[in-house]
Image (cartoon, rainbow over all chains, first blue to last red; front, side, top):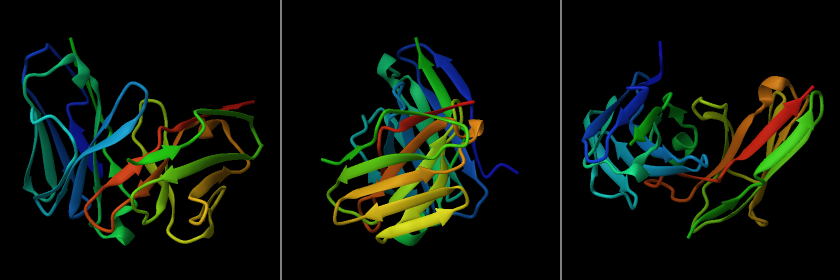
Length: 116
Length: 111
């Protein structure tokens, strides 16, 4: 069983479109994250949710809107896609936000988004 | 701002030992983690140091010196499968903020 799964694995779309990426974890974790990894492999936190509540919203354009219907799911919706949004998006989860339980994060396989 | 510095590339041969350093300047510090990422794969957790000293997990060890804002990952008995990118990551808040990652070190192991 996959611990953290994401769909789709690949997403190719045109500028201006709206797209969503879904993430699910079956680990029973309380905390989920979205990270963006650019072409230089720089991994940057975008959002963090704890028990369906938004905890962190880094300086991300408001075209990006996360939604957590329950603590096992965290989806990412992107409006009006731009070329610069092309990247790999990783979902991750950790047991909780507590330091002792959040340093170990479990990552999904990633969604490679290409905007043309 | 937050910054974590790692070498961009390291090369080594099978069976060797390699050390990947990480120095950090962050607004807070609650521990240093290390992650491995193979090309096309997801980052996977390797180790964590909250306190000064050495943590050993099989062929991999991680060290932390909080007074020097410095840590390293030591990989012993290198194997070809260890060729990957290695990221150090700092937890800067006790609760709330996720991990801040370094830019990664690409390790190439040759035979």
